[in-house]
Structure formats: structure tokens, C-alpha cells
Length: 321
Image 1: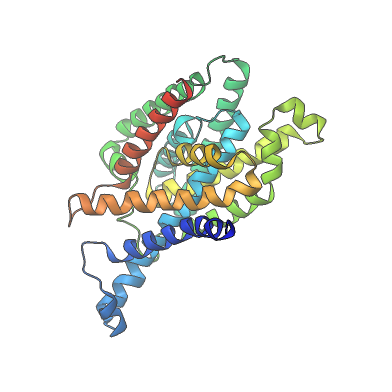
Image 2: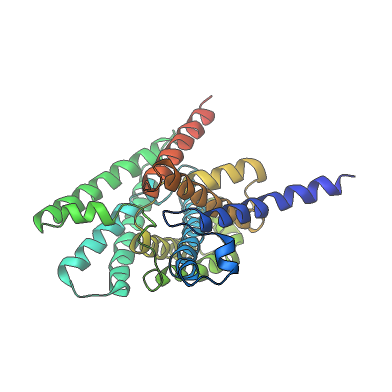
């Protein structure tokens, strides 16, 4: 009798993800119906293959990647309120892209990704050093320091963009927005797939990492090397997502916390759930953004930031009840 409810609960999340994915394919300014696809309408198939499917793939992979990034950072810093948006990673990636645009204006997406990756990686290392140097008694102070650190990086990026007369364009294309995703301009997002695989293979090591340097050393884990690998995985994911779709905050903060509250801290067991919930949250935010002012759309950076920020506040209040 108990096995049936357990099976239903396990099937609920994949079913929700499937429903959201189908809704994402059908929702948009241009009408798309299953009947038109069944009748092999050329315009309908072009809309599906050139726009809707690439957008769906980008949404799912970005949601998975950002949620997994949050898990890795939280294990390294040992704080539940850390993710790329609250540790300066997103702002550093933006600065890297701006540097590539001014130093190598004819460079492609690969070069921009390399600049963003290096800046994000260096900024993440510096953030970890700052957090480890300052012993905080209050866990909320760790993301607060990260937000202040990110604000400084963002100010440097905006000043740099202002000096090079690209401030307005920067604010437009660096905000999270999937409306630009079309066939031939999003494929760099597939780099998130090997990142997720590597993270799962190292899930046990990242779990041990979250126990602290002394515990990791007693269990024979190379703390510095594992932390560096984790920061590199995070930097690649952040760089790829910012280049492909712009900056999207709070996904990596909210999802790992909600999953950990329900299922615990064992990453080998919870990482698939984190990945699926990350994709589901981003799909839901994107669908909401496309429906709010239909046939126009609200950028997902705004919807995800609003919903994620609200959930972040709820998590803080829950911690300090």
C-alpha cells in the first residue's frame, strides 16, 4: 500500500517538468498548435525547430546549471545562502564580457566565454578567501558580504561600460532574456551538460567538502584541489549562461535550499532533484513572463529575480524564526 504513494511522489516532479516543457513549446507571440505540426505546416515546424525547441533546451540547461552551481558554492563556502548572484560571480562574468568586447571586439562567443570564465574564477577565489579570512558568527552576513562584493564589481563594470560608451547596450543584453535564443546562437549552452556530469561524479567529494577542511583532510580529500575544481565548474557554467541568455539571479540559492530542507544533504541522492527543480523553476518563470503582458514578454531576469528574491527572504526569515 505504501509503495504506490511513493511511486506517485517520485513521478510527480518529472511529470511537472514535462507539462512545463510542453507549455513552453506552445506559449509565445506566434501561434503554434499541435494540429499544424501534425499537418506538417512549414511555418509551424520552422517556429518549433528554430525558436521554441532551442529556447526550451536553453531554459532547461540553464536552470540545471545554475541550480547545480548553487550547490557547489554552498558546499565550498559552507553557507546555505551563497550562489553566483550573492558571491559576485555574475557581476565578474559581466565584467569579463565587457573587457572582451573592448579589447577584442571581433571575437566570437568562445573568446567572450574565456574572458568571463577567468574573471568569474578569480573573483570566486577572492570571495572564498575573504569569507575564510573573516569568521562570521551570523550566517546571513556571508551572502551580505557577497552582495556588497558583487555591487563593487558591478559598479566597476558599469563605469567601464560608461567610459567606452556601451552602457545602454550592456544593460539590455546582459539582463536574463531567452527571447534572443534561436537556432545557431545558443549552442554554447550545451557545455553545461559535461559540467553537470562531472558534478555528479564528484558529488560525494563535494558533500565531504561541506563538512569543513579538517574533516575533509581526515577523510583523505584534497580540500584545495576539490574546491578549485568546484569553482572552475561554477565559473564555466556562469560564463556560458551569461553569454547565452544573460544574468539570472537566485536560482542557485533557492532550489538547493528547498531540496535540502526536504531531502537532506547527500548530494548523490539530491543532485538530480536539484537539477530538475532548477529547470522547472526557470520554465515556470519564463512562461509567466510570456503571459503577463502577452503578446510581449517580461525578461526572465525580472521574473526569476522577483520570485527568487521573495523565496530568499522567506528562507532568511525561516532561519531566524
